[in-house]
Image 1: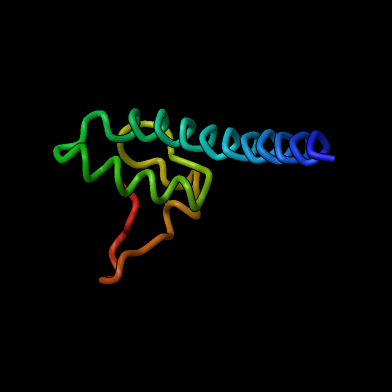
Image 2: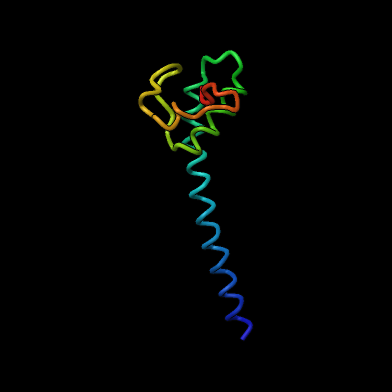
Length: 88
């Protein structure tokens, strides 16, 4: 009886690990896109933080280091609490 439970536990761990890989793949996508987007930013750590937040929500980052926000309307339309653009 115990080998059945051990096998079931192992299967659950493997399935859970596959979901973790999917989320880290999205983070890798956002990390690489935001690194390009923020490469010329004056305050790089702040740019990377907000770009990452916007990318995770929108699954999109405009090309280049500035502008081109028409490529990603979700990214373009996000606002901070003061009504200003949130995404760099």
